[in-house]
Length: 134
Image (cartoon, rainbow, N blue to C red):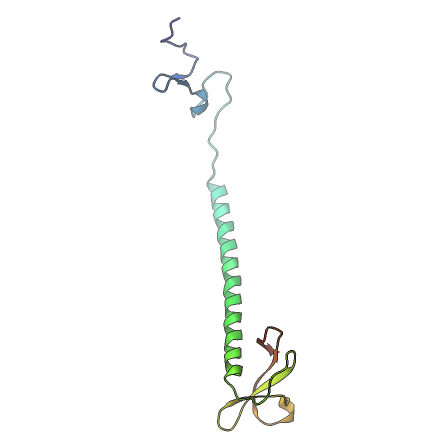
């Protein structure tokens, strides 16, 4: 046999000068296993659905957290722009009211002890952020 011609059972690529049986999409000998292409469409669809569900769930969590933060900001803005003549103590509950002149004011008097229009009850946490008391 010459170096130029290989036997038929040998898979040799003349162009690249390599043995490339491992690259072929088909069996290259009688003893080789049958090569079947797997159907990956169902796996891909399942994966896409899982990823979409996970991303949507995370988006809804972030959106709810953002809305909570905006609500907290609005309450803090409302309280800090209201009138009060004392220094609030951290951890104490205060009540926000609207007076006859339609102005907001903060008080330590509970809603059942006065007849002002109560907006809500709030406490000052350790980070000096006002939290609404439910």
